[in-house]
Length: 262
Length: 318
Image (tube, rainbow over all chains, first blue to last red; front, side):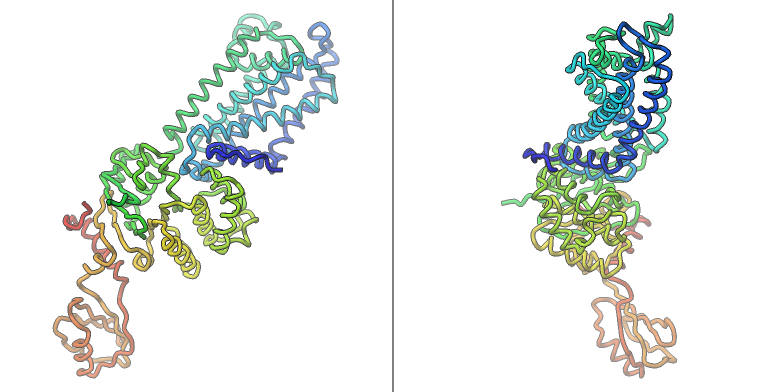
């Protein structure tokens, strides 16, 4: 189904990139949508059902499986937003078809916004899939819908932008696998997905507060369950701060053509 | 009233990060409606110049204006006027030709309904319509080259730049492409062509610039350039072997083999005296042809002169 066509040339260009990205996500759904569904189902079965049933309540009235649902959704949003833009934009660089866009009259912001929109959409689609899977294991009550939505949007925005910066600097496919493997995965696991940082002793508790993913997971958990290890205001400042800085970096890279123009 | 040039390159310079000076102050002008050849040996700076014009390469000095719009200062506006067919294949092989064309138009802000009509028009004109909805990777090399031309035409540019569009393409497909590009030019689009097939440039282009080592070493009309060729060599195929070569004043005759002679002579020297002398000596000529393409001969001479420092400064572009 075609969406209504925008009339401004920049909006037409933005629509074109976003549409192409969405078509790509849907065309290779077994690589873009299915893996997270399978992985998260395993997490729910093993950590939620098997291990979680022995842990019981982690906070008053909150079972362990309920506690890990927000973190697992955020984990999927982070890896999918990041992975989508880094592989798609690097693929365009590698195959040289990024030149189609660089030699066109599109301003840099349209290119950035188009790729980010595509990556965010994948993050949101996967979030919806994981949320739907979680309903087979537990009941979700949306405590603060707007905070939940805003957190998931900001998180996918931050990691889409981070993935874009990675793709611009990457020279080979290994370069886009390094950050997810050696940075994102450890930070996500240590970002309070499976536990509350309040349970950690010093200095690990203090170290955990330097992890930006902790703020995203907890803001999302607050939206879904109404509990958080960090003040909500700080979490939104951290997320917005990263979004602004990464947008500025992404625009500067595109405008100066670093890694893209000789 | 002065006409705004389709392309006005002024003292354009490019030094790459590794210190290679690809353009050392290139200046040239292309008039609207022209079919312009930009020739040069490999590494001369052609692709760098085209890269700057299409904003894929950052210039380090000078300026380039397309219909009066600076590529360096008003990039987005200038790009709206240019269509580029690059030397290397640069489309997504996993997409379909129709989508590649429609998306390319989208990058120029052209609505999908208009883009779909244009894609059908240009894919049909370039004999690609039957492949329009198959993945581009399944197409032959010649088809991929034509697809890049169709894609470049999606924005219906005022200036079409073709960087070796016929490289590695067989003669039949090359002729289809020449016909299409000539038609585009006849309809008013200014065309800049780089090619290593010099007969292609000679047949199609009205004006020419030759670039070498980052300098324009010649910038003139094709006619004027070809008129500079003062010596021509003809290959004569004989009806029977000839024992002794006749002496013909003003003509250097050389034997290639028993049945073939080469005659090098000034362009001012008429052929009648050569044939008269050959007939008088009993030499029967069955057929005759130019030894080399005229432009090729000039091109090699100019580039060789450049290498040995004998480039005629008077022939450099202003």
